[in-house]
Image 1 (cartoon, rainbow, N blue to C red):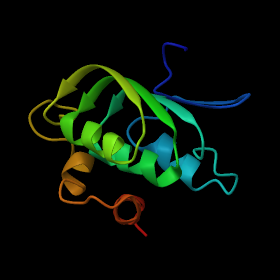
Image 2 (cartoon, rainbow, N blue to C red):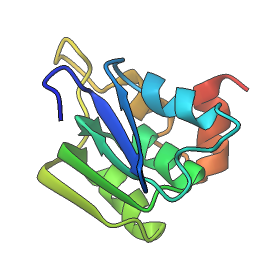
Image 3 (cartoon, rainbow, N blue to C red):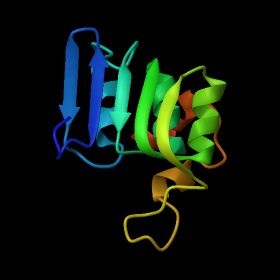
Image 4 (cartoon, one colour):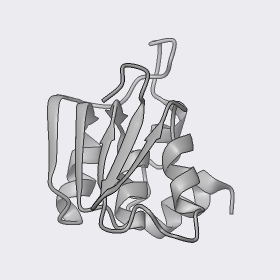
Length: 123
């Protein structure tokens, strides 16, 4: 993985790499008619509940991250998506570190991947 990579998707021989931050890579791949997330293994620098719900919605089959939130881990387990994480935290912090990530907060009470996608994508 390249140092500036924030998110990487691998599906068979296909490798997609993104340097975009936040949920942009996942939302972009979800809007692709080729459905690259379906059956893919995804590396993301941080996986919060929002990202986990998008992985479940897109049909990912595995995930790896240095940092995962406890709610994200629960979502991945509930949807049978194996994951590896170095650290599990109670929630993902915002970029300034003084509160909860706004995306994690948006889906805190949502358990449906489809509902989360609609909220996060603005649909």
